[in-house]
Length: 611
Image 1 (spheres, rainbow, N blue to C red):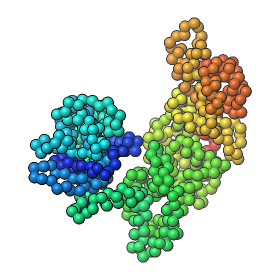
Image 2 (tube, one colour):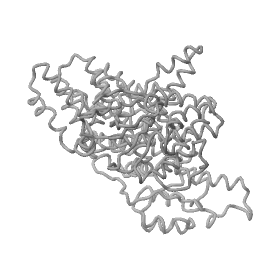
Image 3 (cartoon, rainbow, N blue to C red):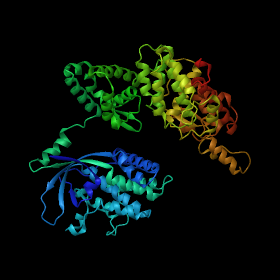
Image 4 (tube, rainbow, N blue to C red):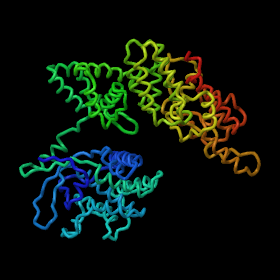
């Protein structure tokens, strides 16, 4: 075999036909697992390129921006050379990588189509050069296409590629084939992106051309005459399991252990054996993605160790960099893995009876993992007093919850918690809680300040919560308030089940039974009522059976039904405090009351609690 790292220009610019063998499966990539991730990876490269170009002082620096932009690695493809007569296109069979090559061609077709639509003819021409072979070299019309799929995909693939072919009469597609969906997805993404931001569509598309030509890399493995293509295909696709980043790290560590004259088998049994169990390879949520638990743990551990963000996709290179910086031996690193793995297990499977466990449960509902490197550090320090640990988690929870309830941005949380981590590393164990409180108290920027009681009250009276904050989080807020009303502390658990649902007190379709004053209400009054109906003061929580039965009922009927069935103090307070009318004024009053309860749970930055 011969392997080379090539960019798309090297692969698609020359007149070559890449044919998918008949024994391979049809095209199966989809939006969630493949197209969306490819587009996001592509966007990272294009955006970096455009940022560097924008910072350039002259044309020379703009040209240099491409060389300074980090390319993106797309993976590997395996090709088998086919014998071809003179004056016929060079042909290669795609032994592995057909899904990737077909997707790239559809992406190019979509980019060409958008470029043509937006009047960027030069960009369209550059995309076209990567899509079609020289017409003088083709014997059959389909030879014009760089990639040729199996028979089941040929019609759909020809459709989407013909949309960009100036010699074709095809102008639209209306089928439901997966390749049609692929083309529509990339067309939509490219079109919206090209017209977004201060740069012109032409500038966006020029940067996309540069990226597609020169900044996407593929490892191309060419088979030689004595290589059995079928055996290699089976080995790549049937006999192996994809390696995790943790597998690469494991292999590297034990190779280093051998060089240090340590027994890798003994170290494995002592420190690593647990990570070979299935429970560590199970997929867990990491934002909107699913990643193996072991990779997520190592990512958080490495972030804690290095004091800088480590991305899951760059985990192994980041680990190599860490090894270059540390003076620890292989055994010491494995000892730390083993120790912090038990801490990570405590964080991800908490005891709900403790204050720390309640915090970790709420953190899971918030669906944020950015505090985990800080938490690994805090829970891993053996000499931290319990009162300081509780103060630390209460401060972190208050900061997170108040910002969520005020609907503030979370986009810089990873940097904020890394900054906190570095301060904690300089703090004596007996002061870590005080340091966390002071750290957040000193934040005053839009992306990091700790909301006051006034901020919280204004938000919970005025802001729209329905559809802006997901129901799981709203249930968690109501659950916390119910727990506070019962004043049980943390000796018993009272969490809402999935059988409870968020309900509008004033219905979303309020006009059926909830009239406004006067015979013909003013439009302004209608608009005001439509705005307040989605604030938290107008929301409560009911069983999934009671909820639909009274959903659009008048207040008298709804209040009576709630009174007959509810056992929640949260709802008893609602019907006892506002037995008369339910309107804009009472909704605001209840929003303020809920804010008061939230303030008692998640203490304000100036609370005496922190003294």
